[in-house]
Amino acid sequence: MQNFSKITFVLLIAILTVAALAQTTAPGVLKSEFIYETAPFPECHASTIAESQGTLVAAWFGGTKEKNPDVGIWVSRWENGKWTTPVEVANGVESPSKRYPTWNPVLHQPSGAKPGPLMLFYKVGPSPSTWWGMMMTSADGGKTWTKPVRLPDGIAGPIKNKPVELSNGDLLCPSSTEDNGWRVHFERTSDQGKTWTRTEAINDGKEFGVIQPTVFFHKDGHKGGKLQALFRSRQGKIVESWSDDNGKTWSKLMATSLPNPNSGIDGVTLKDGRHLLIYNHVTVKPNKWGDRAPLNLAISEDGKNWKAAAVLEPGPPEAEYSYPAIIQTKDGLVHITYTWNRKKVKHVVIDPKKLSLRDIKDGVWPQ
Image (tube, rainbow, N blue to C red; front, side):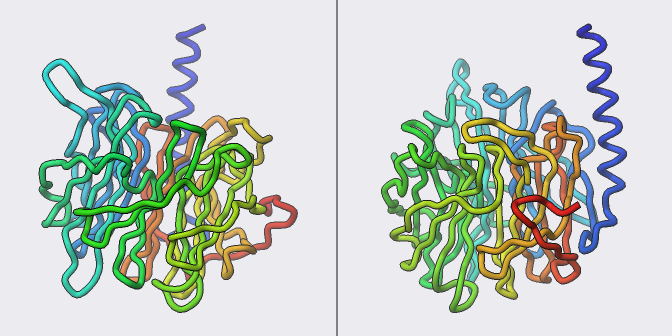
């Protein structure tokens, strides 16, 4: 029976691979590809992507299995029309006899007239309730990296999704903890990670257990005005909060109309002011884990009313397309990466002007 199950799984992956490579026909989808075909690690998860020095850089954690001590942080760059072979740039080795797993890398390229080096945040530790934050930087677009530095106690860095730059130049990092319920807080640095401050948790972890925020900009241009944060939750819905003071204080958490099967999400405010959200549109009951397929792209002008924009991966339900990351590059295109069945990292390129939008009625994704 075990052999049959293994053979069935291998056949399923083969079928999904063929289907995945064929799914490039949805309106607005320009490219859909794997960042790598083979790698020295059997599993991967939690990818991130950034634009740095005119190219793309992607990272993720990979190893035998999530939580295994051999899990390290791997990086690939878009170079000469293809992704480079993944290279391990960080791990949790502390001594010849002690090694911890690494988790959730997050890339960020500071902007401005004199942008700083590319930043890579990640976590090290036995579990999400006990891990600690680390940071390293690259001055050459991800080719080489500085020695990792541990962040101050109580500072984890952006926990899954990218930080955002505020109008005053501060870097606002959406973060969360899992040691006393699922709770969200926000960290900030004004000097590219040298010094830090943080808010207290904005929720008690009881009414809403939420983690892994993603941040949108509203009003007054792309980097100013009101902020909106959306969260992964245990309550079967994507949950939201709003800030009128650049992330210092946040409103009471409220459930949105969008479902969430306890899976990571990410979003980006486009240059035209609209908001793109990538997530698994899967309905589940509160405190239940749901499927991580399909993988959906929705768009909104106000952060409240969302329209269906694309299905990047339709399924089947037993597949896993999860932990997406999304950015808009200088040319206006949108780049997305996500976990593909824990075996590969998928990269999708979107032209947001060509997306075909449809209404989401009563929380049901349109057929």
